[in-house]
Amino acid sequence: MNKPLVVITGASSGIGGAAAIKFSQEGYPLLLLARRLDRLEALKLPDTLCRQLDVTDLAGFKAALEEAEDKYGPTDCLINNAGILRVGKMDTQDPQEWQQMFNTNVLGLLNGIHLVLAGMRHRKSGTVVNIGSVAGRKNYSDFTGYCGTKFAVHAISEGIREEVAEDNVRVVTIAPGIVETEIFNHSTHTETFQDFKGTIQEIGGGLSPADTAEAIWYAYRQPQSICIREIVLAPTRQQP
Image 1: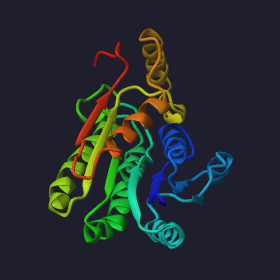
Image 2: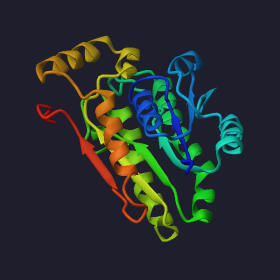
Image 3: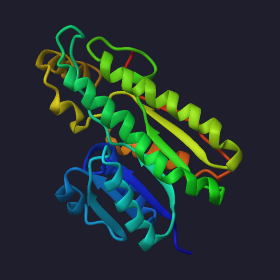
Image 4: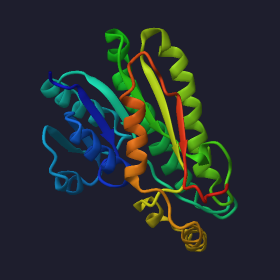
């Protein structure tokens, strides 16, 4: 029996890349979306459509999704992983960085949900997985803008879950703590970034992207009648 389509945003590295590998190993056809097409294609996964996309581009997102669904059938799982991190003090951080984070982390996530949700409700089946963060549950110094986007992800997830529960559609929030991914490499606030690297070393390292991919897979592989609403995972030695 052919397995249904899984769509992953931000799939060129980190959690998204690890999730792509995991779901491909489990035999699922994939639509992988990211701004770095070469990184998607380098994964060389079977039954996979790779498209270059910024998730804030609703029309482009819609076109890629329609192309994948024409080939593999309706989307059964959307993994909203695309995200950016910018840190700094509220009085000195460039406001453009807040705009970038909210555009990608919140509006981009909403774009994907908007495009797949009607079909899932009609079919009475489907799963939306939103990648939140422990930073969506508590605030961290110098991460205020980023925390705001992740608090939004958690609130959106809960609100949509209530909207679609009667239609047998699941909404899952995966909230990892420190994960060793490239997301920290693009910080413009060098001092905070160096302090954060020190914290990672002190706790013996962060989660691997594959750890988080396994949490996503665990939630998804449950029967459709079971919704794992939220999974919070972090390195054992991570305190806050």
